[in-house]
Length: 165
View (cartoon, rainbow, N blue to C red):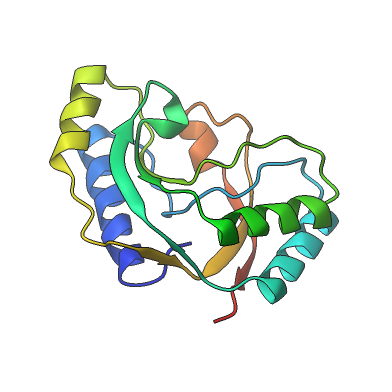
């Protein structure tokens, strides 16, 4: 989860786009791992990751878009060793062999819209940060793959932990 002031900026943008496109609301986030729904393993993984990992600074590269529902419009971040380590810690602690491909991005809109509209939106948005700090982790129970507004609205936050300074 992004720290302030980026959190407020991205949440405002997500809310504005959701209102404009009648799309679901969600918290700004970068997905670090997607695995099986095992609450005890997820809690263990979250606790270990929050103890062993520090805040992470990611560099925004661009605003991009795709025809994939969960990547309609998003901020693409550059690769980061701390984020890769966090992903590995969670995967090992959760004892999850899932082959989630870490691709750090922060979604801004979940909605099936035409490519021309996505492109115009991507061109119109500027991220006012050279780096975005992420200072918290959340485990979220969700339908995977998420493919609709109802799927997004069914997300349930299971636990939250702050990353060490």
